[in-house]
Amino acid sequence: MKISVRPATTFEDVKTMVGPKRPDANVCWCLSYRIPSRDNVALRGPARGELVEQLCRQDPPPGVLAYDGDEVVGWAGVQPRAGTGFARNRKIPHVDSVDVWSVWCIRVRPGHRGKGISHSLLAGAVDFARGQGAPALEGYPVDNQGRKVDLTMAYVGTRKLFESAGFTKTADTNSVLNGFPRVLMRLDLG
Image 1 (cartoon, rainbow, N blue to C red):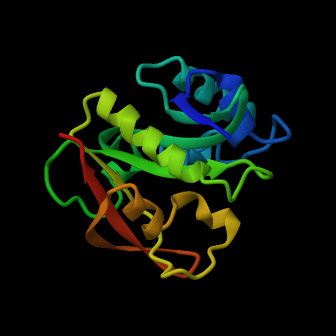
Image 2 (cartoon, rainbow, N blue to C red):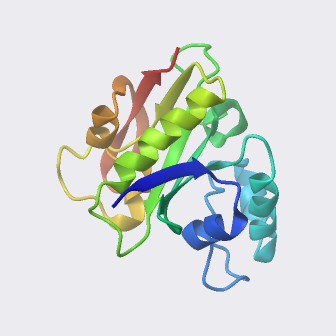
């Protein structure tokens, strides 16, 4: 299996990865960290998908997609931190004034998990951010110390995943997800 990772410019593929089964559902669409909380709560039903479709046409697009041949199998949300909820998040610290990018969501489709696709997605997010001129990339995974993470909460990744991609722990956070502390992991891209 050869996985390729590309910028998320194809809305239908993003929809396959993060959209709901019903268009009127109020699921995340990977917007909860992408837009201010108040806007996220106010945005309902089909308007959520319409916003994501607009984001797919922007430069840079909202993230990257992993493909096994022509089939989309994964998603990673990656953008400049200044344009995400992490710019204002009180639980995730800012360690300096560098205009870092953030990767906050890594999702692999059911039936394709356990094949290393999350590693390919994170590597693709690194390449994408570097190609956009990002000086560094941050992630905020759980430090689960090898224990099982509930699949609905695994989207943030694990410390081990980020370490295997060359990231180092830069700071503790005040954020906890699924009972595990989240840590700030960083990779300099310069």
